[in-house]
Image (tube, rainbow, N blue to C red; front, side):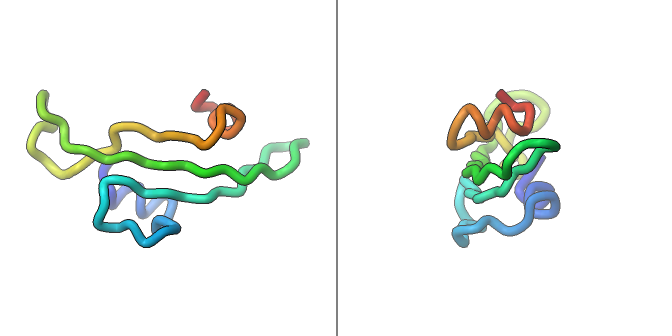
Length: 77
């Protein structure tokens, strides 16, 4: 997934970082029967050095959550 795809799905980064290698978001996550949870999510981009995507546009290398509870809420923990 590249920056344009993340932008379309999650929206603009919350800290004006469109030209950097990271997008940072503050998300209010809800689940049935649970209180809303405010979470910080960081999307880290990079260009693969090997494989079929080498030397192409930056893609998502990893997603970092502020806490494990936030990752658990979205099933990424």
